[in-house]
Length: 282
Image (cartoon, rainbow, N blue to C red; front, side):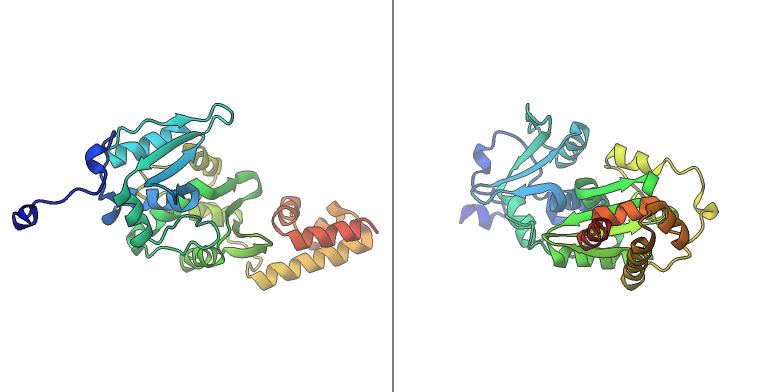
């Protein structure tokens, strides 16, 4: 063919009639921001099965504007009048194919997504993107958590955090899984890692970590073991002691467990909640 003989790149099917511009090969090359956006899509994106559209939604429109700028697209945002949530629709067959074929992010991904092969130098940017899309932080309880439906993805995420000396735990909560990180110093170490060389990020989550008044050097390591077996044993000890006195405050005091930790167990561990409610009703 004349085009191929003269090394003229061929445009993707449908790109000639595209209404909005976009950098179609964006997800072919790793960068800090590409890793972040990939993580954001892995958490909060929707790969349409019926068409060539990738959708991202968020209640803060500025984060979608940052992503738009990075993708060099003039695609407008749409706002759901009922929920107030903004949506960015990325219409590109090339981008959709690259997300699926290079990075393994498929339509209907909630329960079968695998953790992508992310180069180590970009890993914290990917985790920050996933955290901004589907993560939670509350300084008052010293808790960071992620929620997902895919065991393989969440187990890999748990291993990534542990490999970076972050004492995370993976919890099975019936239809979904939760990776949880607790402790005043651990969540600040997590913050220091994911926000290193940051560019795009959700301000409200970043600001939650900034509530810490002490430096990392001033924060103490946790004395308690954070292995799953150790946490499970602490929960069992709580239930046994609570069965004796039926007082949350007294049980926490005897076992040196903070009440926010007990509340976190109730929220994040369905089996513990059932056992506690059964004892409470006796």
